[in-house]
Image 1 (tube, helix red, strand yellow):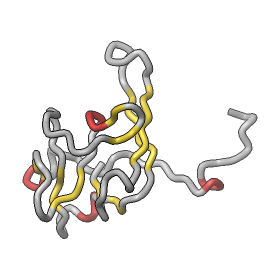
Image 2 (tube, rainbow, N blue to C red; image 1 turned 30 degrees about the horizontal axis):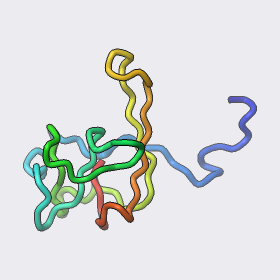
Image 3 (spheres, rainbow, N blue to C red; image 1 turned 90 degrees about the vertical axis):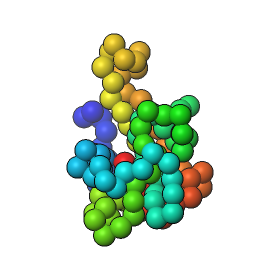
Length: 112
């Protein structure tokens, strides 16, 4: 790491955990996209290095309401590098990365 001379900040990159805490926003979460919702992305939407959304057969919801209550927990759509850390028993590779590309999922806002 000492050989790297750029910081994330100097590259214009920031790091954040997912903002949506699903058990706190239970009433706003929807299994299927509907009018007034935006994509809610979970690791189950990661496949082959890109986000596949929606996934109706997934065991996680696919959407969250976009309103005054949920807006502080949403992010503007854009290109994101999403990661998920697994335990060694769950996945051979402990860290799995995935790209969210706004050209494949049309939305102004997102929930992670």
